[in-house]
Image (tube, rainbow, N blue to C red):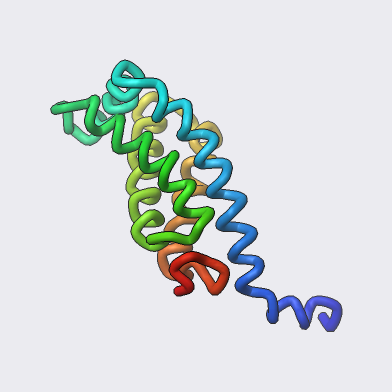
Length: 135
């Protein structure tokens, strides 16, 4: 369609909008987890028990919180974007397993599934031209 033919010239801008939008939301979602302290991190870390990893739940919870919060900020900046995307995919896989093992329906775990696909795609796309890494 001729109306949309020129939009292909703005691929980097589209990637920038996606990166910033998703990154800001992840930062806002992860900040309360990160500032929640060890009790919050331990509760988050118990999600790893679904993968039969029961040692140091505080560490795993902290890693999840920092991945969401700081990873969201790095996503906005486009800094270490592919590494952040890999960590986000791992984080969301754990969330999907936790939700499905906890009896949630596929629709209740849809957000985690969708974001897992988004970040999996970001691994291949990179951060684009409008990023700190400029990859």
